Amino acid sequence: MSIAKLLMCPPTFYDIKYSINYWTNVEDIVDKEKAFRQWQKVHDTLVGLGIHVELLEPVEGLPDMTTVGDAGMVYNGKFLAANFRHKERQGEVVHYINWMKKYGMEIHEVPEDVFFEGLGDIIQYGKNIIFGYGARSSKEAIESVKEVFPELDILGEYRIKDNSFFHASHAIALIEEKTILYYPEAFEEESLQQIENLFESRIAVSEEDANNFICNCIPVGNKVLVDSCSIELENELNRFGYEVLRCDVSEFKKTGASLRCLILTL
Image (cartoon, rainbow, N blue to C red; front, top):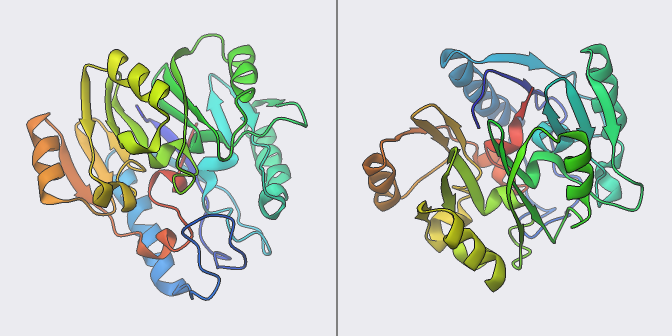
């Protein structure tokens, strides 16, 4: 993402109350003080890089609101709201819409029978976007994206085959306009061929790095914010001209989230 301004939601009520993905164990316990320290470091790091951060008030009983990146997508004063597949998260949407209205955004929604999970499945860098679908977002959601944001360039629409990478942002990242980090094994064969035909500048990540949610990163200029990263991948990123900045978000990984999940570009 090419980021100037974004939205974050403090993890005041973040907790494990249910499991709706491969990674979440309801018997795990969130260290809430540690989670807040980790979130604050991400916030402060982004501010230190010159990014303006707005805050969304968290709501008790909605523990996943801190993963505000899934709220929808914003571009050019327009907000396309999420329609979550799981009922546990559906209560969040009204709060996202209300905040966006107060912020002066033009509000749009996908059809009721179409699931859309925002920047979980929309990978964006400036005007370029990639759409991933399968486990969460419906394939048809891209039609709403095209209708609401005709000014954006859709580089590709790719199907996720591995449901452990339930959002596309766990399996692919645009770290520049035409440079990607990606985990090949997460995609169906046809989609993988399309990805590798389109992106000459690409870095394939290992299973270990993929399982550490390396693709769920935040690129800012020549810096890439990650939770953790193998030495081999860090060296490869350095070779491409990127500096790796580590921000521990281990408490959020307990629910299948990482850095990208914590921000929504405005």
